[in-house]
Length: 105
Length: 105
Image 1: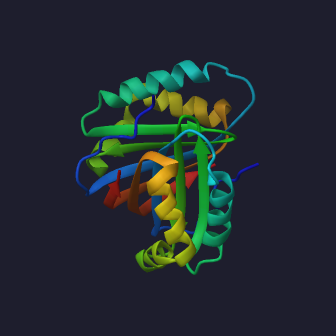
Image 2: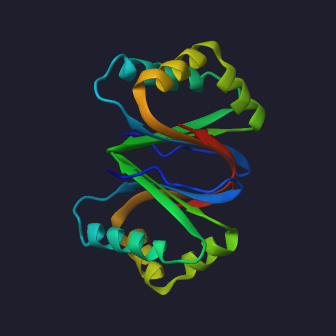
Protein backbone atom coordinates (compact mmCIF):
# COMPACT_ATOMS: atom_id res chain seq x y z
CA UNK A 1 0.00 0.00 0.00
CA UNK A 2 1.40 3.43 -0.88
CA UNK A 3 2.45 4.87 2.42
CA UNK A 4 2.14 8.29 3.96
CA UNK A 5 5.71 9.63 3.94
CA UNK A 6 7.55 9.18 7.23
CA UNK A 7 8.96 12.67 7.44
CA UNK A 8 11.02 14.02 10.37
CA UNK A 9 10.01 16.78 12.75
CA UNK A 10 9.49 20.08 10.84
CA UNK A 11 10.83 22.28 9.44
CA UNK A 12 11.42 20.57 6.09
CA UNK A 13 10.28 21.31 2.52
CA UNK A 14 7.49 20.04 0.29
CA UNK A 15 7.26 20.26 -3.50
CA UNK A 16 3.59 20.04 -4.48
CA UNK A 17 3.20 19.02 -8.11
CA UNK A 18 -0.39 19.25 -9.44
CA UNK A 19 -1.05 18.21 -13.02
CA UNK A 20 -3.39 17.16 -15.76
CA UNK A 21 -2.11 14.50 -18.14
CA UNK A 22 -2.50 14.44 -21.89
CA UNK A 23 -4.07 11.35 -23.49
CA UNK A 24 -2.00 8.19 -23.97
CA UNK A 25 1.00 6.89 -22.07
CA UNK A 26 3.83 7.90 -24.45
CA UNK A 27 6.45 6.55 -22.04
CA UNK A 28 5.03 8.40 -19.05
CA UNK A 29 4.46 5.50 -16.62
CA UNK A 30 7.99 4.12 -16.96
CA UNK A 31 9.52 7.58 -16.56
CA UNK A 32 7.33 8.40 -13.55
CA UNK A 33 8.46 5.19 -11.86
CA UNK A 34 12.11 5.93 -12.69
CA UNK A 35 11.82 9.48 -11.32
CA UNK A 36 10.52 8.21 -7.95
CA UNK A 37 13.41 5.73 -7.82
CA UNK A 38 15.94 8.40 -8.77
CA UNK A 39 14.52 11.04 -6.41
CA UNK A 40 14.85 8.55 -3.53
CA UNK A 41 18.60 8.36 -4.21
CA UNK A 42 19.11 12.12 -3.91
CA UNK A 43 20.75 13.69 -0.90
CA UNK A 44 18.12 15.31 1.31
CA UNK A 45 15.13 13.34 -0.05
CA UNK A 46 12.65 12.55 2.72
CA UNK A 47 9.74 10.84 0.96
CA UNK A 48 7.04 11.11 -1.69
CA UNK A 49 3.26 10.71 -1.88
CA UNK A 50 1.22 10.50 -5.05
CA UNK A 51 -2.41 10.10 -6.18
CA UNK A 52 -4.22 10.70 -9.44
CA UNK A 53 -7.88 10.80 -10.44
CA UNK A 54 -8.41 13.32 -13.22
CA UNK A 55 -6.13 15.68 -11.34
CA UNK A 56 -2.80 14.24 -10.22
CA UNK A 57 -1.02 15.39 -7.06
CA UNK A 58 2.52 14.34 -6.16
CA UNK A 59 4.14 15.76 -3.05
CA UNK A 60 7.85 15.14 -2.49
CA UNK A 61 9.55 16.07 0.77
CA UNK A 62 13.07 17.41 1.14
CA UNK A 63 15.48 18.48 3.87
CA UNK A 64 16.38 21.81 2.30
CA UNK A 65 15.90 24.18 -0.63
CA UNK A 66 19.38 23.18 -1.75
CA UNK A 67 18.29 19.53 -2.04
CA UNK A 68 15.28 20.61 -4.15
CA UNK A 69 17.47 22.78 -6.35
CA UNK A 70 19.94 19.91 -6.91
CA UNK A 71 17.09 17.55 -7.80
CA UNK A 72 15.67 20.05 -10.27
CA UNK A 73 19.07 20.16 -12.01
CA UNK A 74 19.60 16.38 -12.13
CA UNK A 75 20.34 15.44 -15.77
CA UNK A 76 17.84 12.57 -16.04
CA UNK A 77 15.24 14.66 -14.27
CA UNK A 78 15.86 17.58 -16.65
CA UNK A 79 15.03 15.25 -19.55
CA UNK A 80 11.84 14.12 -17.75
CA UNK A 81 10.90 17.76 -17.15
CA UNK A 82 11.45 18.51 -20.84
CA UNK A 83 9.20 15.62 -21.93
CA UNK A 84 6.63 16.51 -19.28
CA UNK A 85 6.44 20.06 -20.57
CA UNK A 86 6.40 18.95 -24.21
CA UNK A 87 3.99 16.01 -24.16
CA UNK A 88 2.85 14.43 -20.87
CA UNK A 89 1.11 17.32 -19.14
CA UNK A 90 -1.57 19.59 -20.54
CA UNK A 91 -1.16 21.77 -17.45
CA UNK A 92 0.77 21.64 -14.20
CA UNK A 93 1.78 23.76 -11.26
CA UNK A 94 4.77 23.29 -8.98
CA UNK A 95 4.67 24.84 -5.52
CA UNK A 96 7.69 24.86 -3.24
CA UNK A 97 6.67 25.17 0.40
CA UNK A 98 8.26 25.09 3.84
CA UNK A 99 6.45 22.69 6.18
CA UNK A 100 6.17 24.47 9.51
CA UNK A 101 4.18 21.93 11.51
CA UNK A 102 2.53 18.55 11.12
CA UNK A 103 0.41 16.11 13.08
CA UNK A 104 -1.64 12.98 12.47
CA UNK A 105 -2.55 9.45 13.50
CA UNK B 1 -12.72 18.57 -14.67
CA UNK B 2 -11.20 19.19 -11.22
CA UNK B 3 -9.02 22.21 -11.70
CA UNK B 4 -5.57 23.10 -10.50
CA UNK B 5 -6.18 25.83 -7.90
CA UNK B 6 -5.78 29.36 -9.23
CA UNK B 7 -3.69 30.67 -6.38
CA UNK B 8 -2.21 34.19 -6.21
CA UNK B 9 1.46 35.11 -6.25
CA UNK B 10 3.28 33.57 -3.23
CA UNK B 11 3.65 33.71 -0.33
CA UNK B 12 0.50 31.89 0.79
CA UNK B 13 -0.12 28.72 2.79
CA UNK B 14 -0.89 25.10 1.92
CA UNK B 15 -2.44 22.45 4.15
CA UNK B 16 -1.41 19.04 2.80
CA UNK B 17 -3.74 16.31 4.08
CA UNK B 18 -2.59 12.75 3.29
CA UNK B 19 -4.79 9.87 4.36
CA UNK B 20 -5.83 6.26 4.15
CA UNK B 21 -9.53 5.56 4.40
CA UNK B 22 -11.21 2.81 6.38
CA UNK B 23 -13.60 0.45 4.50
CA UNK B 24 -17.15 1.60 3.69
CA UNK B 25 -18.58 5.04 3.15
CA UNK B 26 -20.23 5.66 6.55
CA UNK B 27 -21.28 9.17 5.53
CA UNK B 28 -17.81 10.12 4.32
CA UNK B 29 -18.56 11.20 0.73
CA UNK B 30 -21.36 13.60 1.72
CA UNK B 31 -19.27 15.13 4.48
CA UNK B 32 -16.22 15.48 2.22
CA UNK B 33 -18.34 17.34 -0.33
CA UNK B 34 -19.80 19.56 2.38
CA UNK B 35 -16.37 20.38 3.79
CA UNK B 36 -15.12 21.57 0.37
CA UNK B 37 -18.23 23.75 0.05
CA UNK B 38 -17.82 25.11 3.58
CA UNK B 39 -14.07 25.69 3.26
CA UNK B 40 -14.70 27.75 0.12
CA UNK B 41 -16.87 30.11 2.19
CA UNK B 42 -14.13 30.83 4.71
CA UNK B 43 -12.23 34.09 4.79
CA UNK B 44 -8.78 33.61 3.32
CA UNK B 45 -9.58 30.42 1.37
CA UNK B 46 -7.69 30.32 -1.95
CA UNK B 47 -8.51 26.93 -3.44
CA UNK B 48 -8.36 23.16 -3.01
CA UNK B 49 -7.04 20.19 -5.00
CA UNK B 50 -7.80 16.56 -4.26
CA UNK B 51 -7.00 13.08 -5.59
CA UNK B 52 -7.29 9.59 -4.18
CA UNK B 53 -6.05 6.19 -5.29
CA UNK B 54 -5.23 4.03 -2.26
CA UNK B 55 -3.60 7.05 -0.71
CA UNK B 56 -5.63 10.26 -0.70
CA UNK B 57 -4.07 13.71 -0.94
CA UNK B 58 -6.02 16.93 -0.47
CA UNK B 59 -4.21 20.25 -0.57
CA UNK B 60 -6.07 23.38 0.48
CA UNK B 61 -4.58 26.84 0.00
CA UNK B 62 -4.99 29.79 2.37
CA UNK B 63 -3.96 33.42 2.63
CA UNK B 64 -2.60 33.17 6.17
CA UNK B 65 -2.03 30.95 9.21
CA UNK B 66 -4.89 32.79 10.88
CA UNK B 67 -7.29 31.67 8.11
CA UNK B 68 -6.12 28.07 8.61
CA UNK B 69 -6.55 28.33 12.36
CA UNK B 70 -10.08 29.72 11.97
CA UNK B 71 -11.01 26.94 9.58
CA UNK B 72 -9.66 24.30 11.98
CA UNK B 73 -11.94 25.73 14.70
CA UNK B 74 -15.10 25.92 12.54
CA UNK B 75 -17.87 24.06 14.37
CA UNK B 76 -19.03 21.89 11.45
CA UNK B 77 -15.43 21.18 10.55
CA UNK B 78 -14.66 20.16 14.15
CA UNK B 79 -17.43 17.55 13.91
CA UNK B 80 -15.98 16.30 10.59
CA UNK B 81 -12.53 16.12 12.19
CA UNK B 82 -13.96 14.12 15.09
CA UNK B 83 -15.63 11.61 12.75
CA UNK B 84 -12.54 11.46 10.56
CA UNK B 85 -10.41 10.57 13.55
CA UNK B 86 -12.94 8.12 14.92
CA UNK B 87 -14.05 6.23 11.80
CA UNK B 88 -13.16 7.50 8.31
CA UNK B 89 -9.36 7.42 8.37
CA UNK B 90 -7.11 4.56 9.40
CA UNK B 91 -4.19 6.98 9.22
CA UNK B 92 -3.61 10.56 8.18
CA UNK B 93 -1.04 13.34 8.34
CA UNK B 94 -1.67 17.07 8.15
CA UNK B 95 1.20 19.32 7.10
CA UNK B 96 0.95 23.09 7.24
CA UNK B 97 3.38 24.73 4.83
CA UNK B 98 4.25 28.19 3.54
CA UNK B 99 4.39 28.30 -0.26
CA UNK B 100 7.45 30.34 -1.15
CA UNK B 101 7.40 30.06 -4.94
CA UNK B 102 5.41 28.46 -7.72
CA UNK B 103 5.47 28.06 -11.48
CA UNK B 104 3.75 26.02 -14.16
CA UNK B 105 2.01 25.88 -17.50
